[in-house]
Amino acid sequence: MSTQNMVLNVADVSKSFGGLKALSDVDLQIEEGTVHAIIGPNGAGKSTLLNVCIGRITPDTGHVIFDGEVLDSHQPHEINQLGVSRVFQTPEIFADLSLLDNVMIPAFARRDGAFRFNAIQAVSGQADIREEAEAVLRDVGLHEQRHALAGSLSRGDKRRLEMGMCLIQRPKLLLLDEPTAGMSRHDTNMTIDLLKRLKQRGMTKVIIEHDMHVVFSLADRISVLAQGRIIAEGSPEEVRADPKVKEAYLGE
Ligand code: ADP
Ligand code: MG
Image (cartoon, rainbow, N blue to C red; front, side):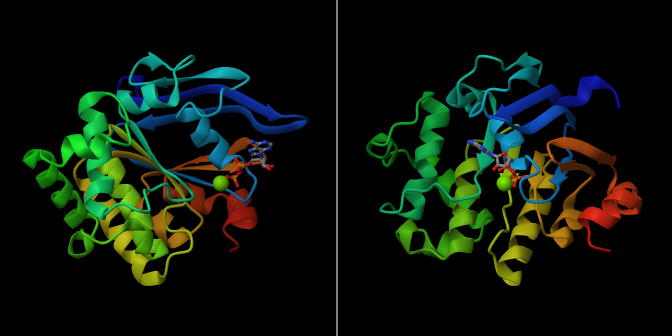
């Protein structure tokens, strides 16, 4: 792989929590336009790795380079402004606001460079942002419920709403931490369809996922993390054929 098409480069990253080494010398290169899955058992360090990439956790050693910029001292909101969005393991939405308002707030943040809760007053009169928000809600399959309160949504719908809140920021890189966790098969399939559409548009994604059906439907490359180390990396076919991975992580 040439390095010029790398959107994200995680170089030699280690992170300990007390005596526990959550990440050990992790290297990860994410190529532009690809879907890169990170799989591995619970406690492997997957969420910690994403948190390092978005600036929520500072690594003990190593660097994260996004779009050519070394992220060593960046705050999470600065990394977000550079074009990195993340869908969290637990949805972070504004329960008392409508779906439209939820999606318009980050649109305003993108434009204004600040994430202010009262942003909604400022954006509600702006037709272009409203139209964009409606389009995003159509994209994630929530347009019909656009006036409902976010808190009233099912768990699967909340996760799709959060994805909409990321998409309206037009990220260069979207990081998803178990986007289908707790979803019904129907919701999971809707999410796979949405992620496939985003892939067709060329959006680069890193997806942490337990569901192998989701991983093998979407991923161009897979990295396997176990006890804080990358133990295998390759195409889905290569990872599927790797005896170590087969035995320990795919249950085959
Ligand atoms: P995964 O997402 O792969 O399940 P995590 O990255 O959440 O794994 O956790 C990796 C390891 O680090 C686990 O043993 C977890 O208990 C530990 N860990 C994660 N975050 C913290 C924290 N803030 N403080 C202490 N230990 C943590
Ligand atoms: Mg996790």
